[in-house]
Image (cartoon, rainbow, N blue to C red; front, side, top):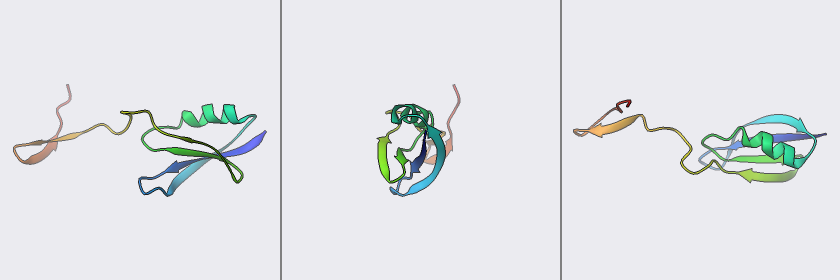
Length: 79
């Protein structure tokens, strides 16, 4: 078993936190890290070795909750 860290990459390219875990193989660690993907990339590391950089799927991210109506930002209607 090896120690892995899934680093969350912020919009500025800096690490924005991480989750540490152990896994038997790189492939198993990648599957585990993919479950953490939301709206920011993840770099998966074991020690000083970058295993893989994971990107969120296209279109995944925060939903738009407001819209411009008559020149003002207003909450978006839920349909």
